Image (cartoon, rainbow over all chains, first blue to last red; front, top):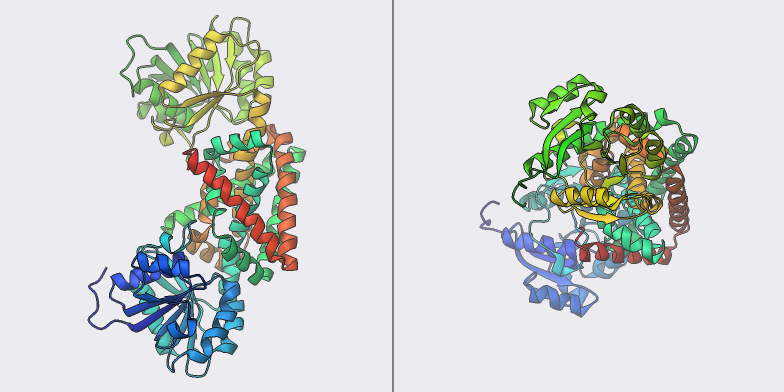
Length: 298
Length: 298
């Protein structure tokens, strides 16, 4: 990491929602001297007490208006389904020139939900750090979470370059590689790389859970034979993921349809004993793994 | 690891097939002083040349009869679909008192295919070490592969206790925890913990591969958002997995049917915007991950 800057990138950064992502970003900003001070608001006082106790932010309050009113940057770090109401709640209290950004896994609906509530003179920079763990809450946060991970920003045609550059600089300063995509393209790419894998992992772990109690113990015992990787994904935050699927419905249903067709084709090959079909399919998938290793994402 | 035994557990151990599993076991046996000598046979001279060059076995030949004729233990380490023909090829050449064991991921069909070809006085101990990587071939082998992993043995009612104990002792000596299941039960448990996860990983990686070339590059770039875990599984040996699905057809199709029903229910909930259904399902799956962590399998 670079030395703390003499002048912080942002004076006051306010976090609306201080779970795994918000807490990690606040810790990273403080470590890098990137924010003059960091504040947090949440519906639950208990969450704020934890954040204060762990030294994640300088100050915190459940009074959302009070927390955002002096902020130069408001980071909205709540499940994507709650972004619209957050924008509605903060809109009247934002100071002119403030930047509002978010970390949601879906971009089109978040922009549609937030934009109408933000006053003139306030800029929305929609963002999505591709980082996380299966843990949640402020106590799960750590400053290194974003290092060597992608952060995708999805600016609108009207987005001022100055504000965009500043948010990009922040993500780079906490260790991320910043990429720009249109919101629509982001939502399509993430549907296949993230949303569908999560949906499938949730499904298969649920299927196993429904097996008899005896078998369930053995599923746990022998999980290392393939199942374990799915359970880690399927332990991710339920509310966050509920909102992802509800808000990226069209793209998820489209890739799910393709997946189901492909699975049905393999099922048919198994039922009919068509070994060539299976082997050909399984051989093809090795290449994409190779691509991931070459891209140093493995 | 314990000190090398004064008297090896087996005099001569012959490997039929010397890929990832066979090579790893041979290396582990040699390291532990558990075999007087180890031999290998394979259809391909090139594979044997590699095994000899890497010091994996003492001697090797494509002449299967010559390799197995003096063996006290013959370890059949080939894809499960080839076990029957291997048994047929070695049966007439085995010495009285020899033990034949295997490492296949499916047990019922392997037993059915092998048993008729083994002469009286030769004992079959069906086994399955739950260990592996996404790499294959003798050069992928390493002596530590089986440490702290399960090895399931699936003896028949007629299996002599002496031979069973000896094979179990070998797996314990290379670091595994040994468990006993009936072949039928093994095949049902593995269908959900291993075979279905692999089938699904192969499917989703194939689905992504079929997307346009532009999107494919982004799938690779953003794979860390969930997709990556699937690609590792989907890079496993294609022939081995083809045979697993063809040979555990009934159990795999049954759990696949359950999985598809569950996925359809979640798909319906997404389409209808039923957030409560999604959240309830996603909350339930966290518990099984917790069980895996408690069982120290994570």
